Amino acid sequence: MSKTWMVVALGFTLLVVGHGIGLFAAPPEAMMGDVGRILYAHVPTAWVALLTFLGAFICAIGVLWTGKLAWDAAMEAAVEVGVLLNAMLLIQGAVWAKPTWGVYWTWDPRLTSALVMCLSFAAVLVLRSLVHQVKRRMTLSAVATILFFVNVPVVYMSVKWWNSMHQEMSSPETVDATMVLPLRIAAFGMLFLAIGLCMARGRLALARLRREDGAPDLPERPQALDLDSGAPHA
Image (cartoon, rainbow, N blue to C red; front, side):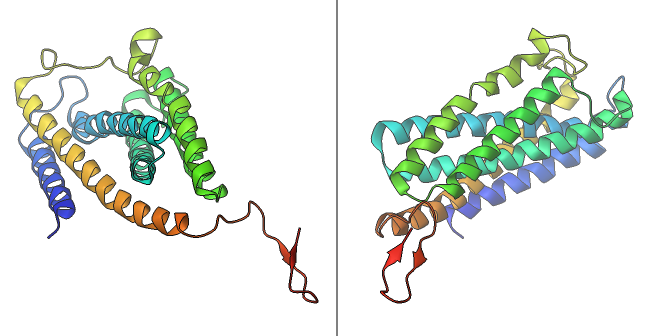
């Protein structure tokens, strides 16, 4: 088994252990009862999604600083995994919101900023699919990633900056000790899983980018072929 899949396996194992303890051993949440057990999945997803976007931001700086394909591949992988985690976060939040708030969705500052975060980084992936020149795509997507990262700390601080239905951020001092252990195990599990997925996706992206970089850049739009002369024309 490669190191990448060892990391993935470690993350998955820790997730199973953390969620198992959270579901069957940890006590019910004081106010929400058993509904509160979703925090063992929801909170680690939120933490690791933000960290993954931070990794994408760092890689974007590396792209602009060095112009190396390895940084670009790592950025692409981090953005993809971050968007996946962000989408999971929104779905989990909706599942949690229905029994606690009575609705699946409300335009709460935390929810709204998290949705904007997901859509903006998804736009980076769309941008990468539309631009075929390797160097130009690297630059544009790196700049977009850096610009969209501005919203990440907004998501994190939104419950402190605005009046929000979302509960404030917890800490070991505000969470029962029996709940801290499974939460931490699940968080490390999600972190290792995300790292492993980024490693696997980054390797595939780098191989593709090297192939593209070794070939002539594709045109921005298809050219029609003149069947009489054999020469392409716009």
